Length: 273
Ligand SMILES: NC(=O)c1ccc[n+]([C@@H]2O[C@H](COP(=O)([O-])OP(=O)(O)OC[C@H]3O[C@@H](n4cnc5c(N)ncnc54)[C@H](O)[C@@H]3O)[C@@H](O)[C@H]2O)c1
Image 1 (cartoon, rainbow, N blue to C red):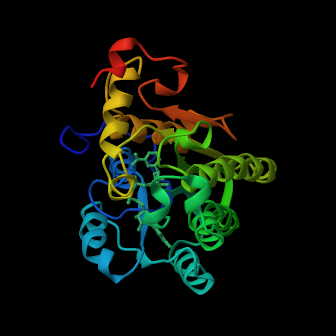
Image 2: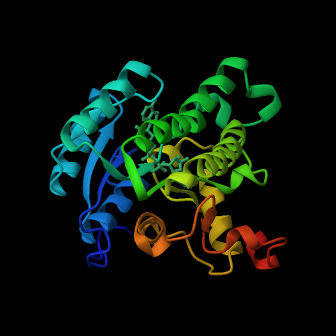
């Protein structure tokens, strides 16, 4: 999956500079998006969350010609200040933002939502997984001109209950509502803001969800396309939304999930293991 087949090349992102937040390794959704944007001529800066991840992110970012590779913890104002100051100092402006960040305590990603969601877990999950987009969008917007675009990544657990997704689903609902409000506020400045609701993709973040295996196989069997969600499809949607192809599209939550979200009742075959 992903980088094995070359990403479609072209000039759709030529002359555009963007900040990509959320690459952890080569499986990250943000990494698939970055490769697609690069294949269409984008210049990118990358953030990474902490020294341990720098080892993985730096070589990936450098392989796309990036020299602005910045440490950034989205829960820390000073860290966000420094990251956006570095972008401003180097480039002075931004054409796009990719926000692909989420985190919660592993204990909250299993069993009962109502029993396992403590006040602290609720607050921390919202902070990293929803507020960070509001904050990043605000900071990015002052560097943006009309025609700029932002995306975030969300999941169906915001709209429907998904076993073990729990508090993360609540955070994703807040993230999607935030996307609409950010789109309303930045629309008059000519900045578009959208979310991509991706189906399950094997990444570090997905590995934290209990019963992940069942989630993947059920999505595959029950979705209209009878297939996994291809990271390349998510990357293609990101290219559409971040390039001028996406003109006039804002405030949208676009599903890229093999059609799973339209299914009310799956075929009987999907229920057999
Ligand atoms: N993998 C899936 O099945 C799937 C499906 C739909 C949506 N998503 C969403 O896609 C986004 C990217 O996740 P992914 O699946 O690529 O996994 P990933 O683990 O590769 O990416 C998650 C990123 O969040 C970053 N992060 C966590 N806490 C942070 C903090 N305090 N400061 C800065 N960065 C922090 C991590 O460093 C990592 O780069 C997430 O929002 C996730 O919820 C994932």
